[in-house]
Length: 98
Image (cartoon, rainbow, N blue to C red):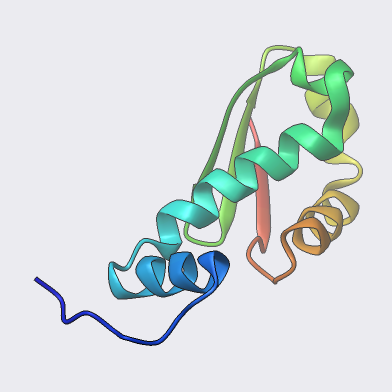
């Protein structure tokens, strides 16, 4: 059992420390990337999105519409920039639409 600290921590700081100590950041990044996609793309794109998965620095997005996939492929760079800005860090370097 970890040693108890006597100092008072804010809840956010305690959660960040817990995530760091238990090496949970990769999992949190995956969840954050999925949520960022849903927020930024809106209902029109989300209705055709089957799955969003972050592996390393690549975001894989499965879409049910080939027309939408083609349209989004033209703006991959801008989508990556928007997602990284939403996440607050350079997490995504490549976007694969399938």
